[in-house]
Amino acid sequence: MNHLFKFDRTDITPETERPDAEIVLAGDPVHTTWSMEEREDEGIYSGMWQTTPGKWKVSYEEWEYVYIHEGVSILTDTEGKAITLRAGDRWLIRPGFEGTWECVETTLKDYVIVMP
View (cartoon, rainbow, N blue to C red):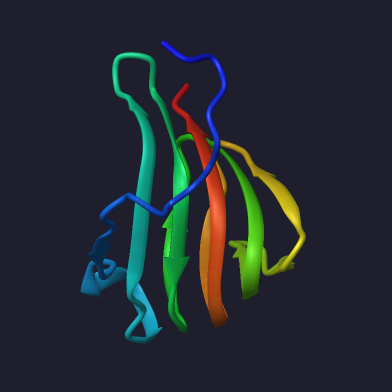
């Protein structure tokens, strides 16, 4: 196994999907994922993810580190506290976060997910 891995989506066929209709609150967001590392036995996943505008409910059971390449999205918790994600931002989303993800401008992010 190579111990260094470059995030590069050039030769990866993306998967495209929409969130389940029952969690969508606005718009018709389309999610595109370029999976780069999937280690189900270790609960580790990484890649790039893009979404088009819309708003949907989220509930995190996992740890997720994100780096925003482009776009603007707003994460709002169940108490109404909102964080705006913009190009260049890095965030760690901890297990237990619940609220909404609102994509204002098509957003592209790197992600690394670790399941507890």
